[in-house]
Length: 267
Picture 1 (cartoon, rainbow, N blue to C red):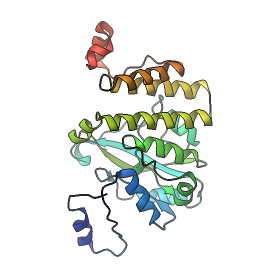
Picture 2: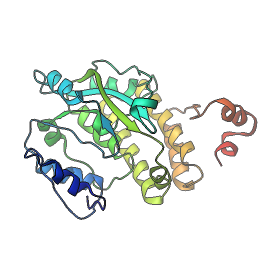
Picture 3: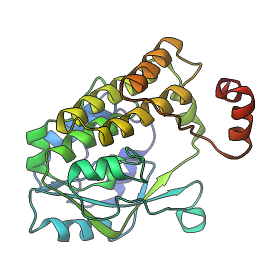
Picture 4: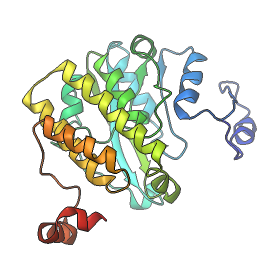
């Protein structure tokens, strides 16, 4: 994707005939993923970001589970780390660390739904991706949510692979600050709208609406006051879906929010 670091040179130094390097001008992650997939020929595909890490046997474990289940998608464990996966990686097993129907996987998570689903967590059979369609190139922030939801809902089941670990890097300041740029906020909002539509089309029930209302509420609080108009639209979505009183923080911040209101805490 037009990377200006030494990625291309480093890959060439590996001198491995199994590796194919595709270079292009910077067009965004979604476009790069689509280009890479269009050039691939394998039975399975792994979309994987440069700043995360996989356990050595991650893909082997996922392939083994999918060999006799070509209509399913393989998932794994997400471990969050800041500096070193060997030193400070943390995880809290959510409810969806098990074999589940796709919709159940999406709305269970930690009991509240729509949690961590970076694309690198999954191994996708290539025919399912071709059937469901590639990445939406109009999206930048939380494009994983829209893409993974669409692919999972096109599969028969999500198969959990114990010890297939994705170490998800947190705390990169450039990533955090970029999230509040206008174009990224719009992308995040649009991705959540598309995800909402897909889930309601699959099952328009109280349990699905409750999960979606909570997520819209968290979205509005997270990005307040950066985008006032989008904040109001997100609040409207939460109300339309039944409302949610959940707040995305605890401890002293939660206590202060009860005294002064959450807008004073996040401003």
